[in-house]
Length: 269
Image 1: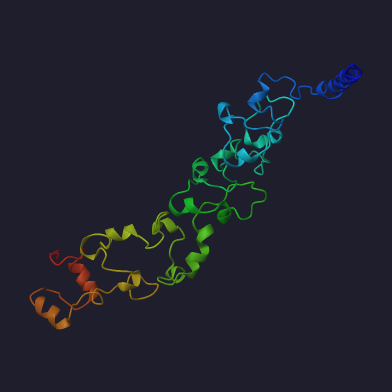
Image 2: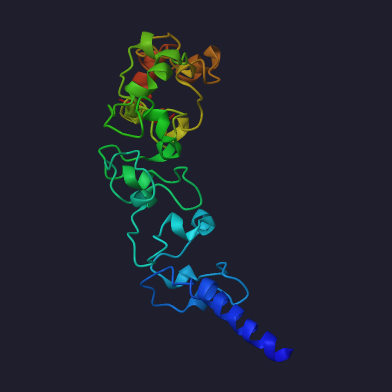
């Protein structure tokens, strides 16, 4: 009985070999690595391949991709590492080939555009470095960033027109915002040219005022100022202290003529 079964067993094994085992051809063609680098004897599923040993370690979102997303499954040779080979370049090559200047594998959200902007005519400094691209490039389509007008007023016109203390429009202030403001601190304004007229950022008056109207009491006319509103200068006291001073008068313009530096002892002779 056994002698009759044996030939049939041989025939079945031969058929299995021809139909199944012989059909397991190498799917990767020119592959110089051993199969067990990626597969296990238990099944033919990919178990793990250490991409850190290649020129392109996989990080963040790249780790979740199937091999064939980047590679031709028949040939796992070197491929270009330029991002635009896998990612559609919405900037149409105008910003260069290296997406990582602004993006990271953790996400496609822009994380740092200040470095790229440093090569333009308008480097991003201070508060500007924290803005989203769309805050300024809001008319751009598909990320094609064209040069913009870089003067302050083109972006800050609404600020210029809405501020009331002081009213920039009625006061005729310059539209060159950097005369009083900086990229790092928009408020408070720092009109440093004021030092040549009367020191308010140094000396006795530094930190003693909050806004222009503390001293300039006539809106729109900065030639008019008052020393008497700020100081505890009672008239009877001032009259007594200046009794021997020629030309004395209880008047702000006269105060300034004798105290141009804002100190008690800088009376001009």
